[in-house]
Amino acid sequence: MGLFGKTKNNFGWLAISCQSDGIFVAHVKKPPSSKPVVELFSFYPADKPGYPAALNKLAKELHPDRYQCTHLLKSGEYQLLSVDAPNVPPDELKNAIRWSIKDMLDYHVDDATIDVLAVPLDKDGPARSNTLFAVAARNQVIGQRQALFEGAKIALCAIDIPEMAQRNISALLEPEGRAIALLSFNAEGGLITITFGGELYFSRRIDMTVTQLQQADVSHKTALHERITLELQRSLDHFDRQYHAMPLSKLLLSPMGLEGAGLQEYLAANLYTPVETLHLESILDFSKAPDLNNVESQQRYFMVLGAALRHEEKSL
Image (cartoon, rainbow, N blue to C red; front, side, top):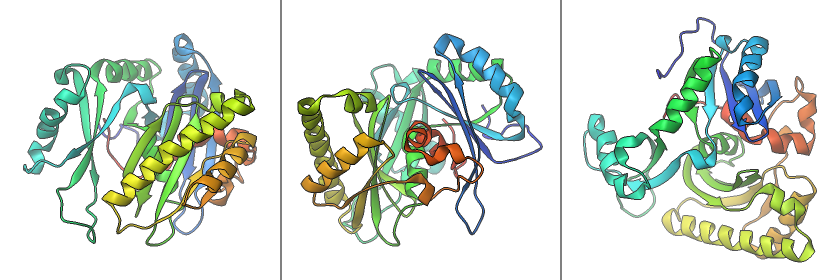
């Protein structure tokens, strides 16, 4: 897959995410001096066997050939690994990383598609080797996904991951000179990311879904909140040790509705870091997408909106 499709008309990025209940789509326009505008969002109900028909309908209705299309992988379809940067020329980097992560994969490294994301050095921090994120996905997964989109005549220009989609949202929220932590939950689980200067420095998965949080009774919900707090405290402490020259301004919770309010209150009472709830309308213009003004829709479209804010030109 090439980095760019063969479209002559470039309307920007169209993000497409295949979830268990259907296909989410979003397009965001980014004016230079105002909030990004959500120009398009849509949902096509489908289970996995129904993806081809849903994508065909999407292709007919949304004309994706006008856009650069990016597809968002699900959490179980790739691994994001933190590794020390090898001291090799740039053209040898991917091969060196492939060798470095071969024992971290549960399949043979020859069966992996690998990309590399740089983590900028902390200039004010201690001297240490540079760190990279290696993204690894099975060739079979990437090949099947490409075939799925090719079947609908949708040219994929990039394949993305939720950590980078969430990074894109964090970049709109960072106070000058301060890092920010963002915690989200969806049907796949929880994800905490910490960004600084628009770059991803830390990410960690939490094995807990938004459905578990919403359906738990009072006693079980307290136990889940305690577990989330412990995971967050470990993550924030690790970031502080690694990047103590990057002060963390606050922790933001992605839109979650009533459950989010309870979690925000619990975390605020048990973490030393200020905790706030994110309202996407504070950073995104929904004038052309008024249905996204409600919390439930913001929760469902959170990741695909982040993917539509893509500003890098990298692919798996």
